[in-house]
Length: 349
Image (cartoon, rainbow, N blue to C red; front, side):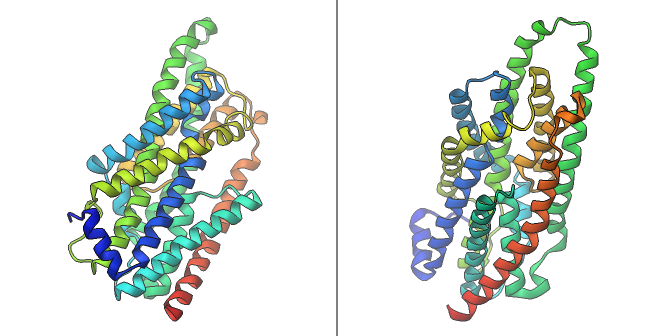
């Protein structure tokens, strides 16, 4: 599909709700960039490998590049998001249901922020579109195969992140037992800088593909789902989503870095390396496997792993409980909200 901006606005003339959906996608992309993307650079700042302003600049740049590159060479996450729900049927009703899904995700995100619940924007988006698809097409609105990749990704990111980081830190401690710790600071610093760049790149790929897929889904519905796939990305839309992530990173990085990396657990350069390598592996593996995951949960589970490797008492174990609690709340509550709003919109509009 070659859809220029002119053709897009021609679609908007027929389906005005499409423009509202795209606006909300940009909003939630900026929010995700502000709240999730900084986790990619948090440990590098915490260990003083990068000054905070330079880290933010690199994070914003490579979030932009990550989506731009990976959606061309490995769009598996976009494919999962695009195919996990079935919005087929009347185009107008389908677009109304998708609009309801976006409003539900943003509303639930605001509620979580007010209540201090560590919800994932990705999971809110998934729950919202799931509820809306159920409202539109019943159980046929859920495509089980792709949808289950969400569950696999949730479990894998939390468990594997903790284990991999824990083991990596133990290996580094054993390997460097007789090495002067001061001599390792330089190499670890540069490894962390490289890892931070990779993490920002992969975050842009993971989160950007999710939002890109929903934007493509909206366009597909407006076109009547004719000949559109998750790989049919207009260049202008790709640039727009990439910029939104970068802008969000720039706006929200300092607050998130202070609350995550500098408060949860104190880490040394060695631990920062273990954390970053673990998170890079998680994001790369799940991106290639098409499993939508929360970058913040990947980074948090890895930080907990290195903290536990040093001393389990140094980790606030309530964080893991809070993440699971957020899952338990987000999927049914945000899903029900999306379901209810979709029914309401389809009834009155």
